[in-house]
Length: 260
Image (cartoon, rainbow, N blue to C red; front, side, top):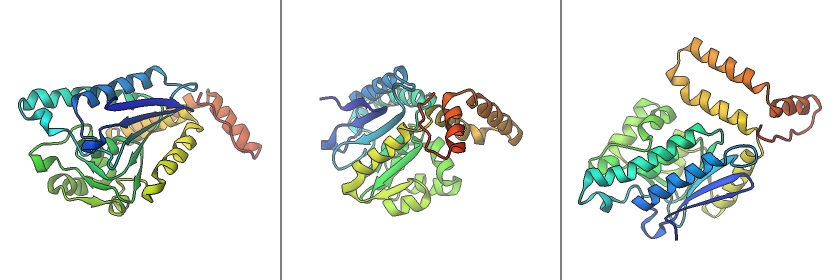
């Protein structure tokens, strides 16, 4: 059985970490299989392929961080074997138009929290507990945690979360903006599926342009961002989805987007 499973159905690509016996702690096989899944997503990106990506974990937790036993004998080599494929996979996901949804339960710690922060949207079960945790083992963060966390919660809160590594429950995470929604644990799968289908039936190409605008906005001056918005909007006007959206609005009906 794969340590990280991949499936594609109804436009929904699902990456599921599958080491429930260790709360999906990330090992080398998991990292390599994550990269392979992201390569699959890149190959099948488009209106007839991947339109939304769901990242989840099996069992009681989303991910309890990296498997520290991998780094025990050869810390640098072990860390590189985990980080390199994960970073390559995350870079591929960032380049795709499909939005990324994290579905979170139980332990969301270390690399698990970095992964969740990197998603565009996050839905959490009420039993989820968040902890950046790296400082507890004398490490700094990876998997984009230092890029995403200040953008999500602001610099001061990010310092608190990263330096103190105190656990944060689901409702506090919602209040701080770490997640978008908190649902009963028994409803997590159903609610995740509903949100994923909603995104899969949306204007995927427009989502891609919006993702890029939002993710690069803090790196641009105001005038530069206005130019980027103009260019993205004008590019969008050439798409079938834009024409359908305008026609549906003027015709007072629900649009049928196709992702192109």
